[in-house]
Length: 277
Image (cartoon, rainbow, N blue to C red; front, side):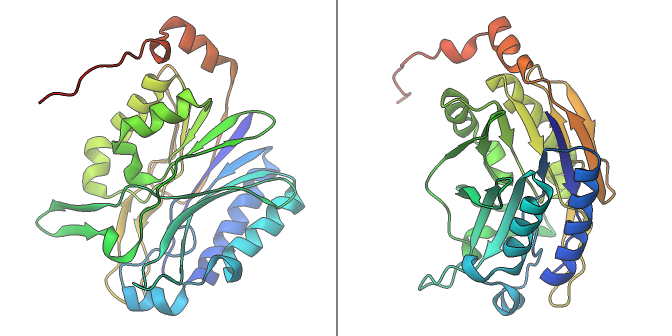
């Protein structure tokens, strides 16, 4: 399987982001990718709630989702839209951080709402409270394609290994980890955590990321780490996209999933145990 990681520096202007995203997807398809992955919040990177309220839409009206569904059908590809920030109509006004897998017919094959909210203080000058603006999901999602089963996750989910083990037990061959990772935690943890999730599960890991300083028409710009990665089931980093926008191609030998799980069959060795008291 030939896959592509699309790395973006999306701002808070969804139409402008869409133009760049569509161009990079077309480039990836021209290079033979049959599975193309975009990062978390492909449509809008913003830390300003008022700006988000002004530019975000509900799923049925979202211009990015409509356009990318059409493009996936035109190109005949599987497209992982890492996530879109979407209005929900919830009484508390919170948004959804929702991932989509689009089939070659343009249909939505799977949806996943990010379960774990990034409520952290990573430094004296950098803190986040994702749960203030986004509602958490409550369901793990596995999507099956003719070539592979894909486990859908988003960014901060990466720090919760039980989710990935559950997806592997359910049959995942590839784990998707679209992200907008903090530069501070990116340097310290990004590659290590992605490699660990691959090794623990015997899955390929595809992690398309946001990168750089994100343009902001309102509020302060956000900064993200970049370094979209593809990791093999044995833990080798296959590609690292660095910090620039663009497309990174990777060929996946899916036979390596079974091979790695045969070499170290830890997924068959789970045992019940009592929790500590």
